[in-house]
Length: 304
Image 1 (cartoon, one colour):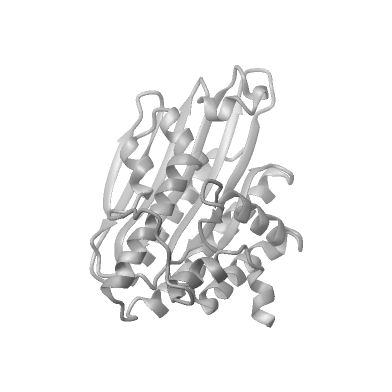
Image 2: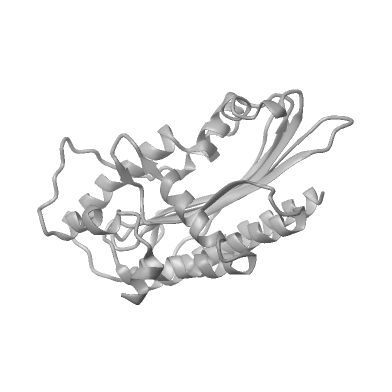
């Protein structure tokens, strides 16, 4: 099992994503914090703040290890009892300034649990998803087209399966609505041999910038109003609610005594909640939930 090879890839991926985002912003650079975890392992957090395009962009690498799994992992996986573990990955969230540029999230990760005299238990996970504030059909289709192309070498069923999983996972049950327009989500991936699973994780990680950067480039100079900014801040509240209530990575990080600053860097710098907000019928704001946040088959939309 090539744990060091996976780690080297993840560090390289973090470098490449930060370089592309910094270039697209044109006005800011990432701050880098190296950190160590007392229980074992550490990481490298990179945050871009108050850029021309990105209000906040966090790209985090972590490699943590320990002997006792947190409750969020051990309760559902009794076969992991008595094993030490390693978890490593790159996780990122991008919060643009312009309301017409969607927020995006991505992560790729690997988990290994071991004990003497037994075969290691391992799996990969990850994916990416898009959270627009003002929907754009062209962007949604392009995003899903790149995701489909990344999955294609691994089987015709992979994209639809992981697209559906993404729609189901990034869902706010207390709001009865999706967080965004989806993308890919996979977890517990060990159905192929190690090399193939690792290759798939790389395909997903490498395709993220290819999917997201063209959308940023198309929308970052689009004019916006204060009313649109306020709607963006209101909808960011949904992002916060999901991350703090449902997100597995956030729960695992907090319960495993991870670095809080790195775990919560996914949260936007500004956000607002409004009691019983109702958008004007027929408005672009209403269109977000009426049309875009409906779990659509965006590749079928391309043919419509």
